[in-house]
Length: 223
Image 1 (cartoon, rainbow, N blue to C red):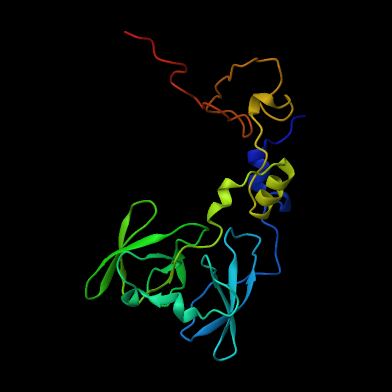
Image 2: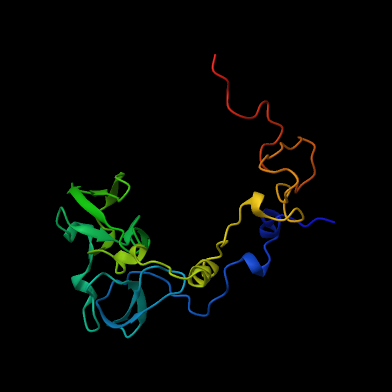
């Protein structure tokens, strides 16, 4: 009797393939009051570090830490409305509408540029080169998120990458179907060699992998 392929096991939604539950679940929001940075913390499911803020009413909150921030700094120096940010400034953690909370450019090293402003809206260019107009009352953080060179650091060991992927519910390592055993996948085993036979339209679940009821396979012949 064969096994269910990995895609079917993941679709079941068991705890093996789901994001683990964490007790530390900070909510990234902007507060209307001034605050002071009291700590720099790490969130397991985020790439950028977070700055823990104590506001004037003695409440606490979290924002994505900009590069160069330190304990004791005030949020009024880095968190501002788009109307108070000059053109050409790099910003991140941008609100999509007033008081929505940071929605754009929240990962480490991701920044947008304030291009121009009119009476009601601000034109911003995102890292994808897409240009969007946002209300001037929306807030953003000046600078760029800390941890810009994250991708330059090598994993070194596969175990470290597995832990990082497991925290986010990602599948790692990804094994090629032809490298599996015959019991694990229809393409597995040495019986079919490198060929990947097409599946019938009426094939049962688990056998429908690769090309399903194709009109043709392989490269087209030159005329």
